[in-house]
Length: 160
Image (cartoon, rainbow, N blue to C red; front, top):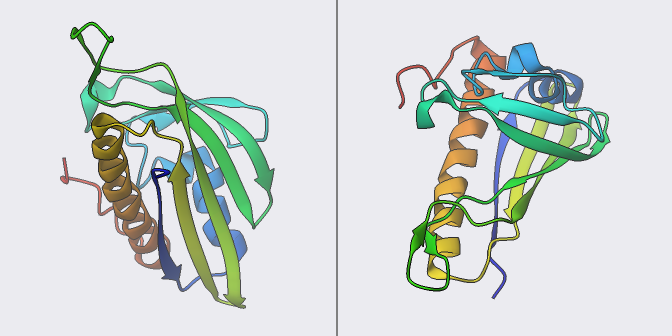
């Protein structure tokens, strides 16, 4: 069974505004990447994301694979899952990436459907648990995006 998920929410803003709130590093840092994003999500770029409120704020790379303005942002990043090295010795991260796709669909002049999907975990107990954690994280991000762009509220503040 392939480990993957999709979350979604509707945002009462035009698709270009919603897309820009994810693409633009200054806006993204206003509700999600609390430690900053090193640049815009341009196709072919490697952008460093940091979460000051989580995991010690250590920056990590996001490899932007595809961008279609106002429609799609796709990237890969390192899978983080509990596991072992094959000899029973625990390791924190296994060397492979998962793929995230963010789809933006205009539902009218002032309404956008945002769908976030992630896939690519190894079919292990650790991969399953990591996918659950990321599913929770992406739903949180979608809710934070909605609150930020519709009402100027940072829901992430104080969450972790």
